[in-house]
Image (cartoon, rainbow over all chains, first blue to last red):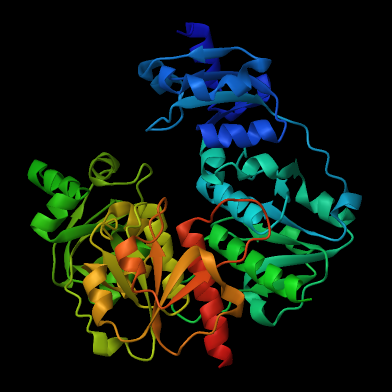
Length: 249
Length: 249
């Protein structure tokens, strides 16, 4: 049983302005919740159906858990088909310094709008061992429940910074690759041992002010007739090729 | 101005059973509609806002077009933010014969459920010049408006067959590759000059009865910690690698 004010608090976290105001976000499903918990995200509260109460003991050492009915879970969930548990976590502060970016790759997103794309990019980056994501201020919010959902727990392992990409990139000392529709073939591109790959907005690509920082453009060779690729697909193909080449090196 | 029965007919096409019954599907947006039209799909009718009437003349040679209000378009559209035009096309009959599959690659989908994934796979396949898609009967319907939307017009260039994959593959004479979580590294795999790549269901992967036809398993090497990749992402990475190797060969 949970109170109206709890319901109202949790539901408010579906909106960015309330996530900012309260500094918390929601995660659904025992698997994802466990991953955030194990990565030392601060748990605020959990809400679960009685049938899985045996699985939540682990979380209840420092915080209070609430058994809820299916109806209550439906009210607080952001999913159309809620799972059996929902948790509220505190939004962490990430410390990303340029000196920590040496010797590895990061992704930069310039205005990616679709939460599903953003979540899929995070999941894919995590698969390929990339743990740093720099987002322009107009990129979708990573704590949007749809992003959290699509990232399948991988968000818990990612360090993320929102900033003006223009000013960030002007201080970034390593190679800056930009994914574009016309550039050098990905397959024939050489990659430095460290760098950042920029992916642009779904409709407009990389903005002019960001593009002027790009030291090398990358294009995924086209063999058929589609006009463009989905941004998460482009990110994945580039990450794969990058890792293929890094591993060989 | 359109009639209630027209509205009811068009709306019914959002559901698979009515698409089957009426043998028609909907496409939204002038760009996609033009692509289906140019690929000789049979246009049944179009519905558009007055402000774009100058762009639709081309379509009106053989069929009747209907100017509609925004309210009417909202009623018939499957999108939460409708574009300015919607068309109804006839579902074509594809003739895919095994002898036509020589010398090229096709994709097979074994129970892919999410319409967004299916549409993205079609768009990606089209980018890489793959034009044949074999779907198990429990794969999502390609004429679902969400699939049509996510394919961004690429569906118009794809030949698609729904069938029992088990029996189809038992007659397929070329190499059969299966995307799995544990198999041979994609990067080190050799590919024949023709073949089919099977992608499995989002949760369960390739089913046992289909898997026994696989002549070579393919795994995308993991460098990080995500448990799995989205199926459209896996499809894209494999198609990219396949084309990279084919082109070199």
